[in-house]
Length: 428
Ligand code: EPU
Image (cartoon, rainbow, N blue to C red; front, side):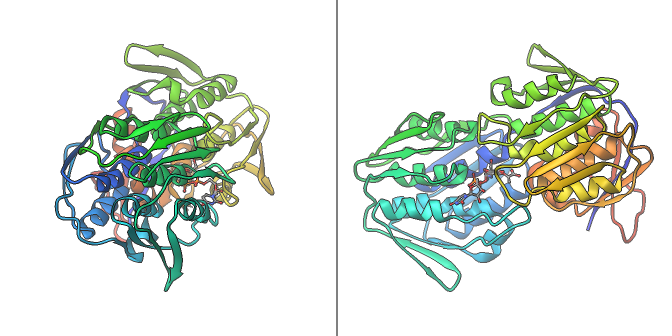
């Protein structure tokens, strides 16, 4: 199992480009199940979760090719309707095949994902929506089995705002008979892109980006063509990497409109941000100011940036209060940050971070994707050596983060804990 070894204290400098968004690419990959033909997705990031989704599509009978950001999916040979446990347990987003499979073929068997490191994460809202659209949903032998001769349009009020739930039901509704209305829908840019790409292939979806989405069912779709939007969470992580090291970096390709809440909080913390041609120039302050923040569904502050922002606030002048409203167990990084000298108190969904002037390197353990990124950021700023273990989490969602940081001057390399041969290994 590989680890990342960082020598902290280098101010990052230079330019770095943002990759395509994981959480936009995954639903788009599953959306290819909705139409027979040859689909082409560009700017797809090279990530473990993308490979897992490709394996899932292949297990359903699709042919998938990936080369330098271009993913080609041929769905002529689809022949199965099952997402097996082995794939779903490594990547919860596999559940996104449920909507397209029931919508197009009237049948899906998808392993129930179960809990994960950041919370219980049920899929009851996905299932409730499918039932409202006329599907029969049963749980058997650990699998959700959903079937319907043809889904029909329905009015669906979500009880909680759910990103993949909204995406799943949009995909279920595009081929349904009649009109589906989704209320309290997720408004994330990834939901908007999914709707836009499906519309370009013949779907009739209105209102994506707002709280109410209307989907008029159509008889069929043409194959998908698209360029995946830049990853706003990777962009935010890179901005924070520059800020936490007091560096000066241009982050290329980010869409400021996707990151408004994060940019606002960075400015509040004293980070200088200046839009430049094709990107954003970021300059870290001598010491960040303390900031209070609460995670919320988009356009609020994203839960996927909470851990990374906490790393910055560990070094702030003053006490910050963070409140996590989306996932009940998303503070696993706090204990690890404390190993680096941070002072954090967790009180239920709130984390009180008392800023310290410096962190000191130590071995730490990554517990999930964004927690890993937070530990890498803290390691970049800490004095001495930090070893981040279990970085397979990081490779699920960041394309070559260590290479990108190295390109900005960071002292970071991969090593295997058992036989640390000092090699720098290419990012997965
Ligand atoms: N929820 C339910 N029932 C449901 C669905 C969700 O109670 O049927 C609850 C969840 O337990 C959670 C809240 O609703 O408390 C929001 O969960 P959501 O369904 O929005 O999360 P998700 O769709 O499973 C996506 C991202 C996550 C991101 C969340 C929140 C993808 C593939 N994943 O997950 O990304 O944290 O939205 O923004 O889009 C990551 O990239 O690291 C990551 C975890």
